[in-house]
Length: 105
Length: 219
Image 1 (cartoon, chains in turn brown, cyan):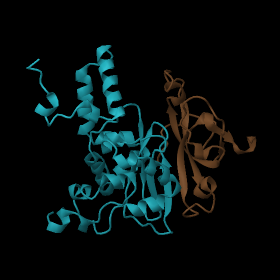
Image 2 (cartoon, rainbow over the protein chains, first blue to last red):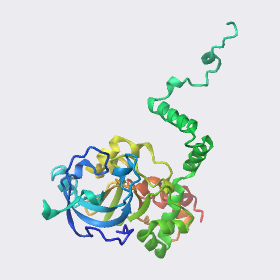
Image 3 (cartoon, each protein chain N blue to C red):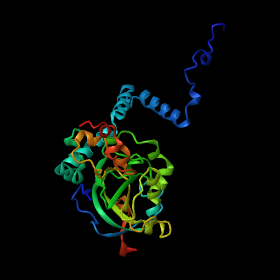
Image 4 (cartoon, rainbow over the protein chains, first blue to last red):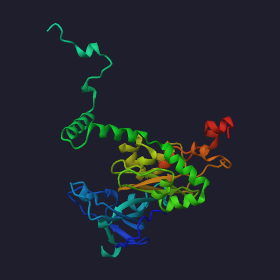
């Protein structure tokens, strides 16, 4: 994958297994509902981006937050019955504040 | 009041405002308020619309064709898309970043923005209506193969489908597979094979036989 836009150190690196926080937050955020609570693998660190959770509410988006590309198996997101092909995956851009280590659950 | 005109009957070509959707009326009201309050000038709004409309998928097609003929450019494109497209004279709008993902015989990427309609407009122009539709945004993540079949692409089970949900300020462009039978075609002819939809990933690039250039035999 050629999505490595920054070498800035983050909490996670490619290959790490992560769980997406399942918090329900009152403000705008960019984490799709269908990956909340799901387990995936970091595929790329895409670099620092303005924080949309601040910008959507009149903020500047600072400080920037690291964005990760996280890969989920279709079967893990939708269940084995609904998945069209067991090898297919879903790649979602997720900000660092939504990621947790698998063992911290 | 004998000179009171009946505007609707005298100007049948002019649609009354009631024909506009609520959202369209809201957008006009917001634009007028922003201009009235001096936040933007009417001329700036017009210029931005002109700039937005000037962008077309032809820009993306040129990038893909270059990547097909120039392996070094392709490597740069996959590693740092912003810098690579700048080599061809294209600058990205706003502060969105760009990533390019490559489709191969084994892996097929398709792009969706389930939250709204994020899209690499700098290279593809404004997104098509279907890309913004709830139906596409819901179905592309759940049953991408069924969606692609409706676009005419039936991928075998040996191909892994990788759906990318572009949920942030990172835009994705698909580098489609170079079609079989396109050897020896010029960069310009190759660009004609690269459709907008193939750069979203819902279809493949055209086969040479599907374009007028190849059919007429012009080189």
